[in-house]
Amino acid sequence: MLTRLIHASHHSLLTPLCSAIIALAASAPAHAELARPDHINDYTRTLDELVMIMGHNAFNHDGFLPNQRLTIEEQLGRGVRGFMLDIYKHNGELHVCHGSCNILASRVAPLERDLRTIHDFLTTHPTAIIAIHIESYIQRKDLEDFHSTHPELFQHAFDPTHKLWSRHKNWPDIGELMGADQRLLLIAQDSSLAGRIGGSSAHVMFDQDILVQNTYNIGDTIGQHDFSCSSRWDDIPLDTATGVNGWKRLFLMNHFHKVPELIHGDYDNHWEYIEAREMDRCKRMPNFIAVDSVERGDALEYVEHRNNGGVVAYEGNDAKQNVVCGFSSAVQRDWSMQDGERLGCENDEMRSLRLRGMKKGQRITLHDHPGGTRDDDFGILNIDRDIPWNSPLVLKDLDQTQYSDHFRYLYSGGNGLAGKVSHIKVEPSPVPHSESAAVLLRGNNGTQRISCTFGLTRSDFWNIKKESGCHNDDARSMNILSAKEGTIITVYDSPSGSEKDDYTVIRVKRDLDTVRTVPTFEGDSEDEYLVIDHHHVNGLDGKVSAVRVETP
Image: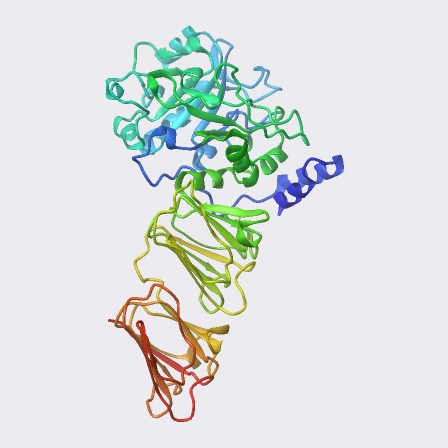
């Protein structure tokens, strides 16, 4: 993995290595399973509880030393919702350009073109909220004149002085912004631009009135990295709580180099660096994370997870060693990693998970088999109680069933799943007991490899000789992962289900939410969950050839 190479080199990057990494970065494929940093699962959250990826110099996507490789339209498509624009007056019109409007130095384009792209997106995406941070080299009259010519581009602008918000003690929530269609936040570095524009409802907010931000430079050039976090403004410390109207200050976390370079996106936007900067250095949740090369590294995945909660996978047990990847448990997904990296998740890497901000009822299933079938090791993570963001839990080992007050992790298999995950299924709202399954295993007491797995969601009969991926005359025990009360499982020696040979009937007495093991098919027993009734002829362990399931 490219980020592993960069991570290993850390601060001692040498020129030959830099050249090699840049070449690799230029050819590295984008994630086929795209992150959703724009996804929000709760519209009652206020604006100060939302995180956006912000494209630093978002307009500067070509020319010499571009900050981005994607156009603004492409950034919008990837879930970017914040855009830093440098505005100059060039040839009598307002343009975006970087440093100067010398066409050889940076992308020079009419401001109207990029604002129209954003306006059209807001018009066709009524749930989108977008922020524009303006670094201006113009006069207020220039903006007034531009507005008079293109008033429609400010149609969705947020107005903090509007009567709708006069009684608000904090920012509106996301649903309120949608309902009022005030979904475009205009923020300027120059106080002279602040206020309503042209007497309209379009309003520009002065950044020092509403937010805090850290100094922007994490290194003058490649190989230099300073991830400290000090305020950009001496008189507005990062822990300043409120701004105008008494509303909570937003936090803009600048996270980019002085000089843009493609490699910076892969290195600086690595999950661990962004997370450590937020948690350990800035010690404040960012509302905007401003980066170069927005699609590189893990920035998009990090914000998806930050907004909605989910899992972070690690290379070691107990959520230790390097981060493999992270993703939200609020976005429905079903993907294989064997044919390439997805959401930053590499095949056969993860061994443990950190759970954060997950919601009751969510489920994640991990498979060894790249097709997501249960004929190899798999684990099912069920969330039974909300896991607060600030109280994360750890699923310490993917090879062990684990229970807590907040989650159940049901593991089945004998070859091991840790370090072998090749398929992931995410279900934000699964049907209860839809994961119900009986797993036949080669050894007694629920041990050794999987012989076959059968769903317990409907009545059916299986001749194991005819089931692909199953092993006939092999199973000696069973794990029942989950089942409804009244479910009956019958295991036969006969492939036709004849009762003239050995068979064992297993009845579920009450709903099962924990793994129950049938250690052998050659004995009778009963407990509070199961009744096992064996009909003996000449032995059933190691001879199972059919299974019948009867659901209530």
